[in-house]
Picture 1: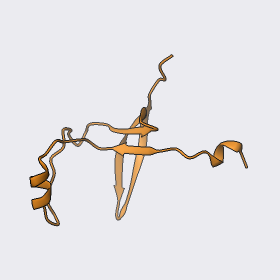
Picture 2: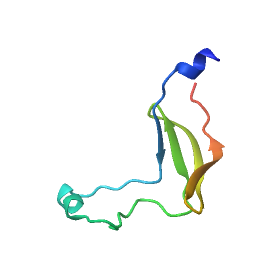
Picture 3: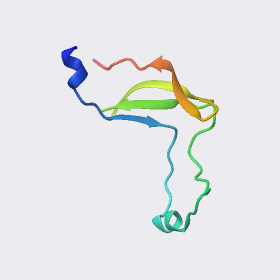
Picture 4: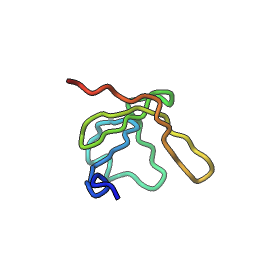
Amino acid sequence: MSVLEGIPIDMSIVLGSTSIPIRQVLKMSRGAMIPLDCGHNDPTRVYVNDQLVAEGKILVNGEVMSLEITKVVERER
C-alpha cells in the first residue's frame, strides 16, 4: 500500500452555480428546477482541495452517472 493512499482529499464536481434568495429555496418542493449559469455542453469542473484540477463531461447510463475527464488543468508555477 502506498503512503499516499491514506491522505484524505476534498473533491468537488461542479456542474454550475446560481444565486437565489433563501425564501425561494424554502418554497421549493420535490421536482423543483434550479437554473444554473451554464449550458449542457459546458464543461463540468473538478476541484481538489478547492483547486481546479480538471474539466470533463457528465455521462449517464441508465441509473449510473459518471464523469469523463476531457482536460487536466495545468498547474500554475
